[in-house]
Structure formats: C-alpha cells, structure tokens
Length: 272
Image (tube, rainbow, N blue to C red; front, side, top):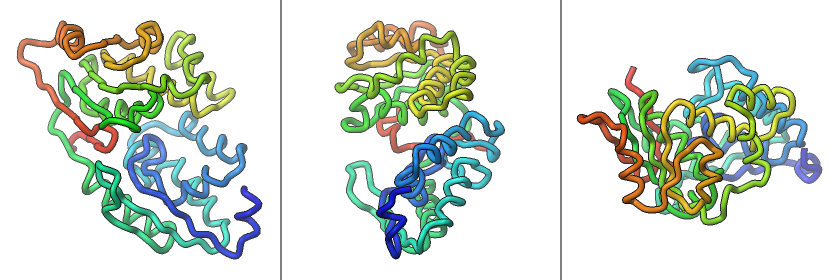
C-alpha cells in the first residue's frame, strides 16, 4: 500500500464508474485496490479471475458485484483503509460528467453502478448471427488492449460460431509488448494454465481475447499488421469493403445483425 495513503488521516477516493470485464464495474474500491495497493495484493486479487468458480454470480464478470470474488476481495481490502470518502462520476459518450456519486465507498459506489447498468445496458431476446461493433473512437481504440473492452461487450451479443466485426483503429499498436507472446500457446486452456502458475494482467486479457476468437469468427478493421491479427486468431481487414467480403461470406441467407456504435460503453445481456 502507498506509504502516503497509509500515513494520511483520511482518504478521498476519486474516479469514474463504468463497466469492467472482471471487476463488474470500475470506480469505488478500485481506487484503493489496485490503485494504491502493493504488486503482491494486485496479483492475488486479479488471479481470482482464473481461479474462481465459473457461472453467473459465482465468478468475475461484467456488471456483477454480488458473488464476484474480485469485487468482494477489493471491498475487504478497502475496509482496512483509514476513513475514506468517495467521489465518483458517471460520464456520457462524449466524456462529460453526467452524474456524481459521493459518500460511503461501498454504498455510493453500488448506487453509481446501478445507474450505469440502468443507462448503459440493454437486454436482447436472442443473440445475433453477426455483430458489427465500434469502440467509439479515440482513445477507446488507441491500442488493442483498450479496444478489448468493446470486443468483450460485443461478444455478449453474438451467437456461438457467429461473426463479430470490430472497428478499432489501434493507432498505437497492441498496447504492451507482454501481450502477444501468450498467443504462441496453442489455445486458451494453455494460457489459463500459464496464468495459474504466474498471473499477469496482460495474460488475462490475452486469455479473454483468445477465448472469444475460439468461439466466434472475428474480423478486425484496424491499422494492425495482418500477421499480428492472425496470431490472435482473427481476420484482418483494411477497408469497409474487405470487411463486408470477409464477414458475410459464411452468413446464413436470413441473418440477424446487430450494430453497436459505442460498444466500449454498452453492455448487453440476454433476457432470462
């Protein structure tokens, strides 16, 4: 933990609340862990994403707090902190502040998370044959690791074996030199085994990426080199015309297609 924070009489935790693909939501307790926590604490917390039980409510996933082991571990950590006051915001698609949530770290963050779910999520009756998704522009697609947030949300809308088109410029490349080496492994199962031995956040994002690529066809319209995209088990496209050619080749004659222009902000779930 940061010595400055440890020596302080109290803490004011600031940040913004949006969806997070394994902590449920950003903001709140995340300012404390991982924000000012030790490397050992961060690794132990994030490793719960690959060691926890699977299944809704019993694992780490988007939009879920109750039963999420990563979130619950963060809450346990922040309870050890000095008296803390939360100041969190919700922003709109243009990045402007739309709402403040202030007060107790746990209750104010939960209230803010409920509002994010209310405003930025939707339910679908069925998954699509094809989803065309955009990150929503820079900086959401500045690199592939950032673009994965949109990929993750869009993936929730496409059926098993379907096609997912992601528009992500990735003008700054992948985002980390430690990311691509994981794709030298044969499959997502081997990446998971590797992370159980030595967890890294880049490795977890690689695991999440490859898991999606194994379950649907992904066409990536970006500035990334085609060989890099192929290594990630995706098809590269350099123009809208090429996207159409590659994405529609195996579509059924009557296909259900969804378009997500702000996929980095929008969470989709199936109606139960």
